[in-house]
Image 1 (cartoon, rainbow, N blue to C red):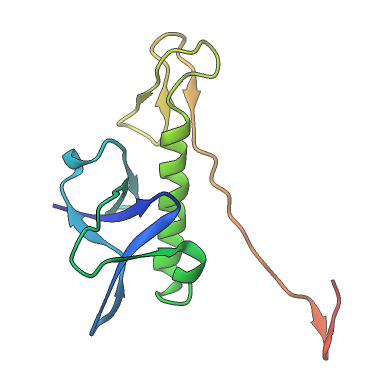
Image 2 (tube, helix red, strand yellow):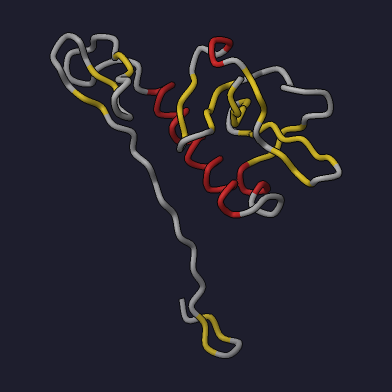
Length: 136
């Protein structure tokens, strides 16, 4: 079993217990049509069914207030990688089905050799202020 971030659409399955909020679930990777590695330990996949009793869905913005920032960042990366896998199934050059490379985070076209890499969007939100005035 491997730890997974499990998504239903753009929402993440979480569980709340006495230890706080958890968003990684042990699951068999063979169970999912799409699974993507995130870092050394976690994987991301789609799951329409709750992964455990009492699991609930939350948006990634809400997750920021519930878990440590590293966990929220991992879930955000997981969602981006999962979206990439779902939307880049065919070569943009020749139209052939892409194949996941085991050696790196990329999809390869067996027809023309084109390599497709995920577009990861780092985001920073800032507020510039002086006293009680917002500068921007």
